[in-house]
Image (tube, rainbow, N blue to C red):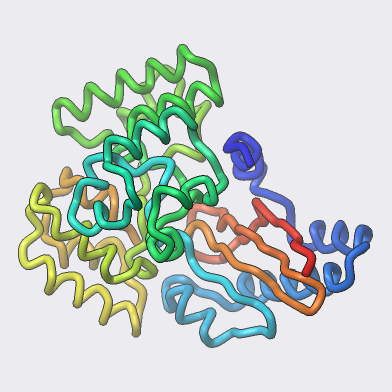
Length: 311
């Protein structure tokens, strides 16, 4: 699936679950498809009505609200393969997730292919377990962390080459000065913000409440970010989220880094995307959700991608 198809869903905030259920019922040529849509509709209603992200991580909430045939997980604890920079891929841990390619070869292949919402395209260059647990192709693009070549390609797809090249030049200027782009800076980038939002954002890329422990360790231990006692901080994050989700204020207090430290552009506390499937005897309904809205509650799930696979 092309990235632009998915972008259209993001901008429209997707279809409501009930509308998708109606579509599934009307086209239920395959046994089990309508039942799968109904099960997903019930799950989304429960998510919207009972999950408070300030009190429970998604993983904890989902563990308490199970349904037959339903499996789902936050995708916001993972790094986007469309945007991850060579700088991060070169870190210990990330480098080991590459399969038979160097960091340089991976980024060259990706730049030739361009942004994609199909994670299967990376099967030949990413280790299977890492592709399953460390990476995603569904996230918002952080202006301070995304690879600038891919930023230009995405902006060119969205708004033409003039916007794409101007955005890359602006981003390059900030990075050469080792400055994080601020909301005020972003608003002045030649109208790019109004064109590229909400896909492009300054919100932190990952949700530490959902990220795998080894991924957090690979990021936080980066010597360039000078986080003191990184192993201990990772353990504190993992142990703490079992009882209460981290807030940005608490996370900053724990990390004890300056506000302009790039690690704060990576590590955040909000789940934006959830992926999963509903399985029954007829097949499986694979889906991706976008959690809309600017405040933690109420949760507003929207379906941005769904595919019925017949058994």
